[in-house]
Length: 278
Image (cartoon, rainbow, N blue to C red; front, side):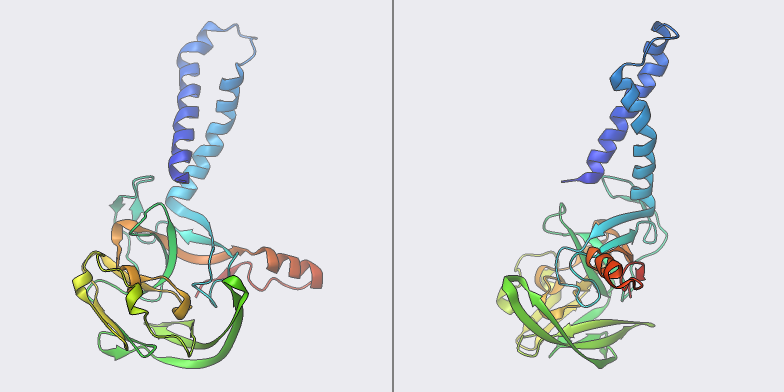
């Protein structure tokens, strides 16, 4: 469901009804006549829809995390806020950039429209920008020939789909000047080669083998990975993210029901609500 399009249509319809009534029909009614129900609703909802549309289109947009591909950074059920203007001002609905303000940087947690199905929103971490050579060998990330600094942070346990218990090793990686957590499972390969799509755009820019892969990021495209490296459907499998598919940068967790209930139960400060996204 394209919520942006629905919101835009609601804005247009309520705005037109209000405008037509103001220019034409209001003049034909008696001064003390009651407003038609449709006009009354339109006049009431149009300002609200307009504010929501502007905020959601140009400033911030909320999203809910549906999967565990970004564990341990983001949990299933986290509600996050996405900055819509940091990477440039885009026209609503068609997502065309009209004002250049910035571009994704290595280490950013980015929301984008899935290249194979733009109706789906994905969230991953940017590890490669245009021109980068991204390698992933034996669970080690290498950018432009230099291994990304990382240090062990212990283990992380969670229950995956199908009630499968997972125990993973966590690592703190540094991309540029920022650090983030990532995790891997010892018994999983760096890439499951037979699951890699064969026909994604710029497929010839990538080479795969049993030890991992090497990809050269084309112009106006980005390479992404999930922080839960061995449980993430990301660029290594379906290719690069084109600039026109970018939605924005995730910057804050604004709600988590489990965190809220735990706060009420123990009268404690929230652990995740209001947390900045590394």
